[in-house]
Length: 323
Image 1: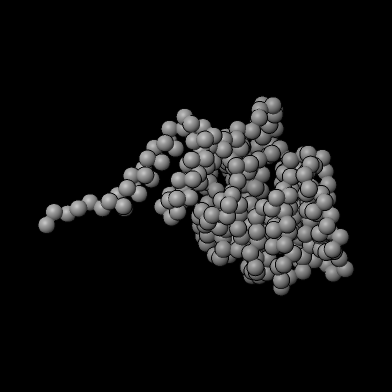
Image 2: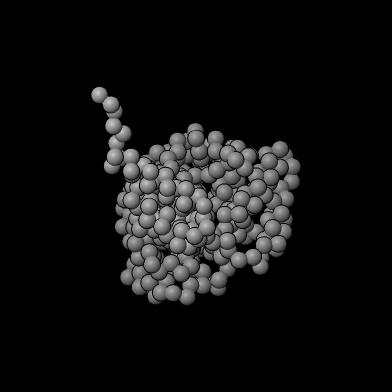
């Protein structure tokens, strides 16, 4: 790339071949801004390396880095270290940046001096592209969410991949911290909020795909545990005390190192069914069927299926009102 980029889009990927092309195309089709696309292949064993080589050979904006299987956090650390632009935008494999995403966020970021981070609204779809729900923030709601220090109420932007931040702010707060093998996004966001203002573009500019192999589905208990450590670190920093959260995260990692991911396809399908039962009851019914094939003893899925069946019966045979 001959021109100095305004934005470095950074993505880590591991065995993401199924949806990698869609993701790459959505980023490379962005207009109105000069950018590079830094992709770190985290030791993929599928067709991911070949796909990345194809794109890199045809588009000078694509810069590929490869590492052994070290995990998403270290892939993002490597990608951000390789970034050449003053602004870093995140992207997750399998997700789609909608048209105008980069230019709209960059414009918003530049509009308010002292801002560290800008997010955008995100819509979430299921494995087959079913629209599930959307998250949109205002500047006020996003700042409030990051200011809280309660496990029940603390949250970050709509999605990790929908964020953009200044590289100087990222470096000033210490960037991604390797000790946080999950929840690395919330750890960074809370420190960026402490560094400067956070903004949100109140438009849906990002589409995230949920699937049973995602971290939220397979490592949810770990995410909760690391989130508690992150909150305790934030409380310490905001009260002028030393932040010991990295040490706590390393201890947590050591105790969980040999545990297998707690994936539950049945629970994930049940979650999808509950989200869809109001808008697409037949699709919800299919997901409940999948949940019960995976785990025939999942009682909540049986109850949900019975509820859907009763609702359908009432629609077919409405209650007769006596004259």
